[in-house]
Length: 61
Image (tube, rainbow, N blue to C red; front, side, top):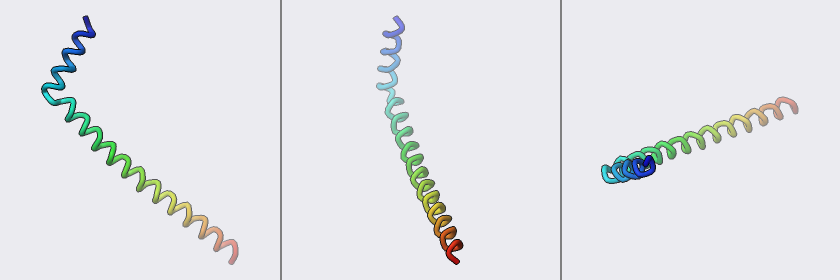
């Protein structure tokens, strides 16, 4: 009986359009998270490379 109830709820959500909105909102949020993650990784890489360059220059001088 609970399966029929969940199927009815799913159909109501699809008819009302709430499912599509939630999926679009989650996809939009995931895109922002991915962009922030790429920026963070780039800055971390830049900091790491800068650190090693300064370390090597200081050790040779």
